[in-house]
Image 1 (cartoon, rainbow over the protein chains, first blue to last red):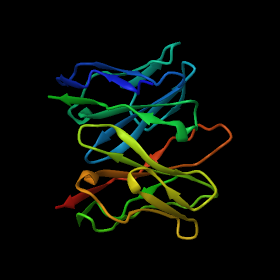
Image 2: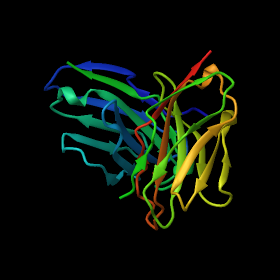
Image 3: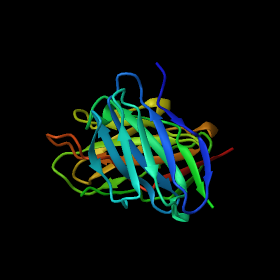
Image 4: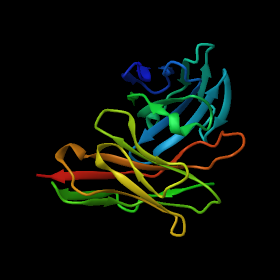
Length: 114
Length: 116
């Protein structure tokens, strides 16, 4: 069974640009969560999607948004990039919300903002 | 809201020596607890989890952890480490609810460095 895939793996953008990251969950998994990982703040929850609906949202500004498609694939978008948005963005999929015992993480997308 | 404290940011240890990585969480009626490992340039891999039942949990790669409710701890242990265990380790907690939508809360991580 294929794992969680994230594209692209690496991305370089400049301040003010916007970016879209993609996540394909494990087959059969319907819940997708996104996390931001930085050296200073560690792993922080961004949002969770299930059945194309945002179920939960972390404490991030409105520049961070996401969506989920009918095939459970998810995208997250960051508009008006700032230097502080440089981070590893991790996607995780699970069978359903709250099923952390079935949660698997993707390899992440490394975003660098110049 | 739940919080997780990993007491050591870095732990150096010699190969074949035992290691313990400490994790404490804020008190709650019931929690689910997890340990993840992250190798360089990779995502997180689940090492082990505590959902209920036996307080001693065995995971992959010879790791185990013990849930201690009175001390609100979930320390990770391995009796003999290998060079390949060098990685960052994250403790995480979730609070089960009827709606199941409480996100995982992670600690800041502990960098384990195994010295030959």
